Image (cartoon, rainbow, N blue to C red; front, side):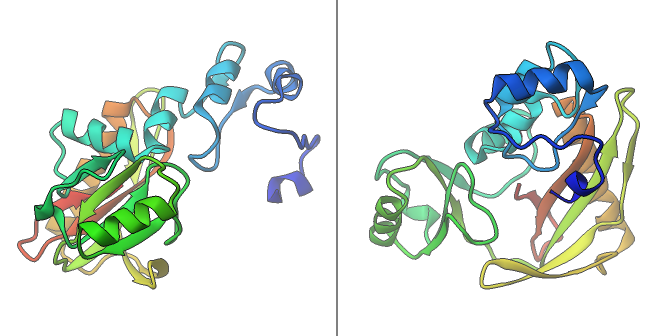
Length: 221
């Protein structure tokens, strides 16, 4: 932990170690998290004693691709064609596609490119039947991301969108600001800000977009 090198006190414990959490609750003024895989239950427990940002409810959505896709659909935010996979059922129209585990996959891990139902089923078994999302592969002009900060009063500030280039499914280069034009960059910032507001998110948030040849933006995650 980089912060542990300068912290007054450094606790090393499991996320469900309630003695350690009680120490946070009594000795800290507030709690935040640097990434989305801290269990939402841990943040919910701490929120009973001290300020916790972002809220457990928002983190629970960000850490699960199924919850994430449902959130986007419920709020009418454009995203690519997708199916929730808990068995071998899938619409043939989605192929070729990318199968992604709902939890803990990142930087190409927990993901597989699949050309047809047979390949998807093999990958699903390789993932030991974990719930997944199946995302249709799309022709893209670019992938961009917006990083923003939102405070408890709802004030939002965004960094300039960055253009992301991947190698073997892993982020290789980010160019900022993205060279896709002011109008598209502003649209991406507006959509990211809307997502933060819908989540009632307080903290720092990253939103990734696919850019279609038509110029349409689709939220990836």
